[in-house]
Image 1 (cartoon, one colour):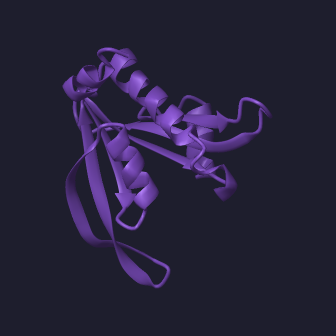
Image 2 (cartoon, rainbow, N blue to C red):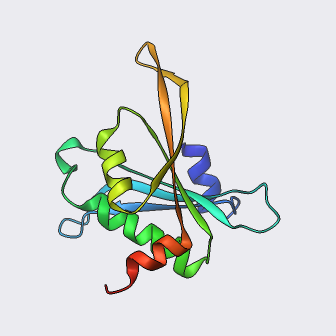
Length: 140
């Protein structure tokens, strides 16, 4: 992760934008987020977004909603992408709930594709299209 961040900070990684998440009141770094473009295409049309808030006592405080809203604004309004993707473990109910809240739809499940905590786990793949995002922004 440190090597990837170093490449990104030097401008050597054009396929990923990484950002720190800072708590406004304390100016403390509390997590990270990213937009990673699908680089196999000739033109960037989709990207995966991701985020992590480090300390559990800061979970469920609205940071994720705010950060995902900003990432989607960047993806759809600034970069004019067609699709945003979200990958999470099936057990991560908070991540799945946030994705659903932000308009993502489940597109698939990769069964037992990752191994941690001494067992295999499913990954859920979700997506949000630009026209779905645009509809959700009307009236805001």
